[in-house]
Image (cartoon, rainbow, N blue to C red; front, side, top):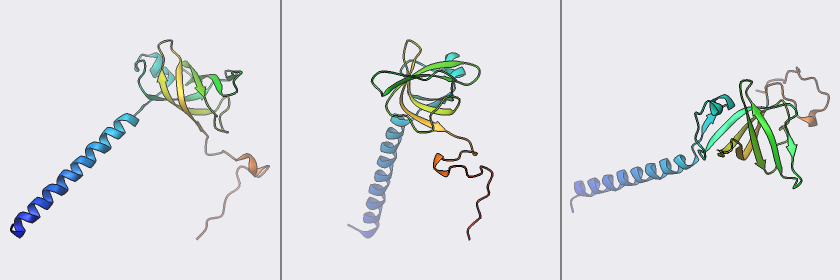
Length: 145
């Protein structure tokens, strides 16, 4: 076979390999893709039952209820316009608390309860870890060079 034909075959094989990798990556991302929704969007009917999504909002004050098994918690996620009951079975992050931000990955059930598979707690830029104690929150950290 001539060198020109070998290069063409090699280029075709490389192109097929790149296309195959792209198809595999796209199918993997499709399984992991989840739309971000607020409680107001969910109440407005912009979701379907069983659709994977991320629900973002604040944990409503006085809404956290821990079940007897020690792992299951029920709470209400709100965005100020609407509220959605959420159920999660697992260990919640340390920052998870009432009146704090959260993002939950999961699906809506037909009864209107969002079942979370994972919960992420959000904090603002003023967050200070408990280990820092009484250190002033407005203290500037010196820049390093």
